[in-house]
Length: 481
Ligand SMILES: Cc1ncc(COP(=O)(O)O)c(C=O)c1O
Image 1 (cartoon, protein in one colour):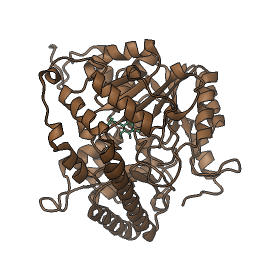
Image 2 (cartoon, protein in one colour; image 1 turned 90 degrees about the vertical axis):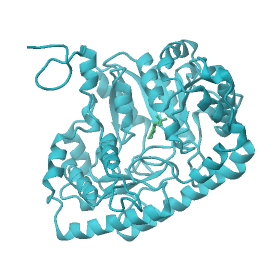
Image 3 (cartoon, rainbow, N blue to C red; image 1 turned 180 degrees about the vertical axis):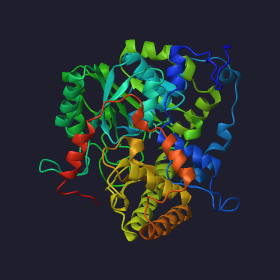
C-alpha cells in the first residue's frame, strides 16, 4: 500500500523530483557541528561540562555596546507603515542609509545608488537567489578552496549549481609569497579542467576578507581576478561580509572602492549585519548589483526573503548614527577582536599549534596536521570527534573543502574566559592524545562518523584525489606564522 504520506516505513514520499533532491541534500559539517552544540551547549552556571562552541563564526564581543544602542529611545518606533507590505527590494529609506554607509565604509569613489541595493534575510539568501538567477542547473562556479562550506548548499538547494574548486595549498612555491595563495593561473587551470569535464562555468565567487583563512586580497590580485572573469564573461560574486572585521593594519580593498570595474554589470557585491555587527540572529544581508536585468530577477525572489519592517527601521537608525559607529562601536570592536585573536594565537602557540597569519574575520586557521594519525580526512574526522568528546567544537578543514587534511578553523570572537577554557580543553585532549592514539573512538562517535555527509558531497568538481595527495607529498616548504 502506498499513500501520499512522507517519511520512512518504506512509504513513497509525496515529493516532487525537485523536492526529493532538496530533501536528500547533505547536511554540511558546519551545520552538523552546530546541531551537536545546540543539544548540549556550554553554560558556566547551568552546564559547565557542555560543548564549548569555538566553531560557529559569530561575533559575541560587543553585545554590551549593541544592546545599549538598540535600547535607546530612538529605536522605539512602530508606525503602521512598518507593519504593512513594503517594497520587496527593501524599504527605500533603509536602502538609502545602506548606500550612504557602504559609500563611506567601503570607500566608494562616488556615491552608491540605493536603487542597486536589494535587502534580504541574510547573505545565505543572497547566495541562493543570485546563483539561481545567474546560472542554470548543472552550471558551475569557480571558488578557491578552502572556503565557507555553507555556500555549497546555498547555491545548490534552489539553483542546483555546483562548485568548481580552485584548490589552494599551504606549501609556498617559488612564485608565491604566502600559504594558500590564490593566483590567476590557478583560476585558469580550474576553468580549463571544468571545460574538459563539460561543465559550463558561469561565475567566480570570492570571499574577502577570507573565510576561513582570514586573509585579505591585495588590490592588485582583486583586479586581476576581475579581469580574468571579464575575459571569460563570468559573473563575479564578492562576499565581503567580514569587510569591517579587519583587526590589523592591512589595507582592505573593497570591490566597491575600485575606480573602474572591467565588467560592472557582472560584478556583484554582498555584505550583511551578521559578522561586522555581530547580529546574525537579525538576518539581514545586502546585495549591490548594477545590472537592472539581474535586479529585476532577484527582486522577484526577494519576495520570499524579505526582512521585517521594524527590523529595517531599527537598522536604519543604527547605520545613521555615525558618531557612535566611528567613535564607539568600530574602534572597540576592532580592539576586542585584536585582543581576542592574540589570546587564542598565544594559547595555541604555547601548546604547539601553528596558525596562519590573518588580518580579518573572527577566526584563525590552525594547523593540527601533526596530531593526525595519518594525513587523511578520516584521521581529521577522528580528531574532530576527539575534540567533541572533550566538549570542544571547532570546525574541521573538510567543512571548508580544504584539500589538505589537518587544518581546523577556530573562532576567537567570544569572551576571554571561553577562549581560555577552549585552550585548556584542547591542551587536555592533546595530552591524552599522545598517550592514547586517535584511532580509539567511542562507538557513538564512530556511528555518527559513518553517517556523516560532508560539505563536499554536494555536487562539486574536485581535483582528482591522486593529484591532491601528490601535491601534498611534494610539499617542500610549508610556511605558517
Ligand atoms: C563568508 C560568509 N558568507 C555568508 C555567511 C552567511 O551570512 P548570513 O548570516 O548573512 O546569512 C557566512 C556565515 O558564516 C559567511 O562566513
